[in-house]
Length: 453
Image (tube, rainbow, N blue to C red; front, side):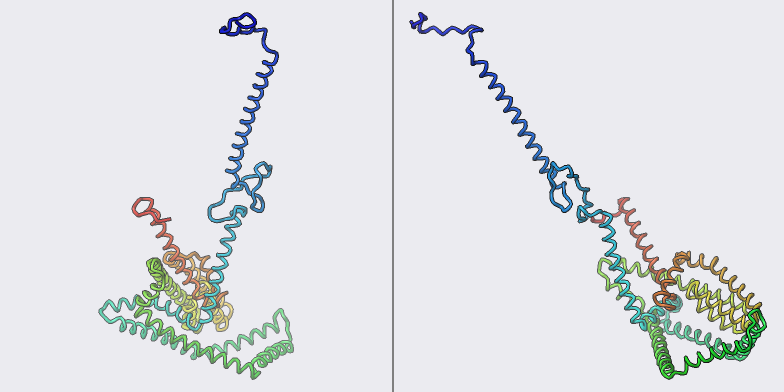
């Protein structure tokens, strides 16, 4: 038994509900508060961890002005625009980067073009005859092919065409020279009479000039001409320049002859050698592009010869009907001038009008001008659109711009070669574009394997 009278093995009685210890409720409340604080602390730690993971994920997308990372909590931390994927810095606008890329590439292309033009100009004594030989070869190659088809050696066919061409040119120049020599005295007399009529008109017309004023102006012009040609240095320089020019012309003439002969005789072998200069993967495109350019050049030369022949015959016929002298010389000049499109026909037509003015007077010159304009309008509105537009596929504006650029770069020679060059470049670009479009359509239709990226 225990001291209070309860048996020793008996369990102590449960306290009554109202008999709880005074500190037991305080202990449970403190424990509850502790559990709540721990739960809030765990939630705060979890949120901090999530924020840290998010900040680490977005750290590479948040950049400052100088490229340094901006703190995540900064109000200025705006995500940068996505990079185009071509190596453009993220802080450089794509338009500026694209303009810069085009700019330095255009500068390199312009520098290369200037270098090529400088080299061509420096070796003009070679490049100009070679260019003329190419034009002549494009014109007469069909005749060589037809003669070769008669089972004659190509060397013999080329020699026959060359001899016939040289004989035709020499004969035409001989006829022109004979006509000029036979009518030169008469034309000189008419020029003197025309000048006298101009003096009489200046004296009795609205100008009212006196004989003293006219003689003073004539004496002053004569003195200027004499001073220009009387200095020994000027004469020596002009003789030297004349000799140099004659030497260059003769050398260029023989270069044209030899180059034309070998272009006609062994043009295929020469072109094969040129194609082998390209990389192996580009040889097919170079060969096809060159053949297309040659076809375009041949069409251009044939069209130009036909237009020049029509101009020469038309203007010569008008001059013959009006009784203008030097009809054959005028026709030859118009024929040669027509090889410079638009500009050459205009200048040669003005020469015909001036000859009519000197020889027959202002009324005949006016009718001659009307005839020249009519012939050139027929050429410009019928022949040029049909031939140049259909065969060469060049717009008249492109022809005018090409001539202007050629005159700026190389004078008359540039005007002569500008349009053939533009025609060849246009044919090559159109050919490559058509091949690329055909290849794309074949890939889309499943007829060709896709090209590797």
